[in-house]
Length: 102
Image (tube, rainbow, N blue to C red; front, side):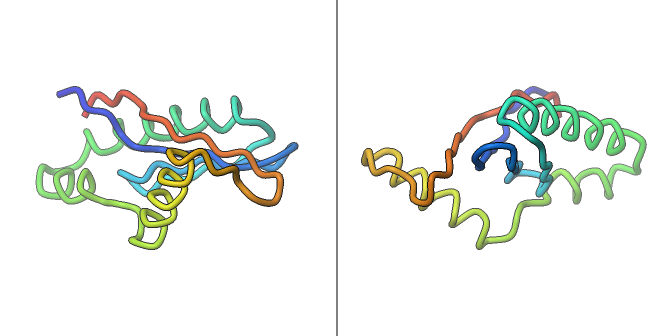
């Protein structure tokens, strides 16, 4: 089954973090491109591991989400971006969807 997962990356200079809200996975790196690729790889490895687990565990872990505070932070910034409001503190932020064979 193919689905998309919601992610974002935030950072400036050589300090970046990317978060997958659907599986509560985060990576750090030196650029947006690095954390984007790192998150793709981490999600793929997570799904490979899930495939080795019993069905009940697999279902439970497929439903794992980032904490509510992290999801609300994402929603807040998505609304600000939609309204054309710039981020503060010189940080850049990217919201994106990743395809996921789940």
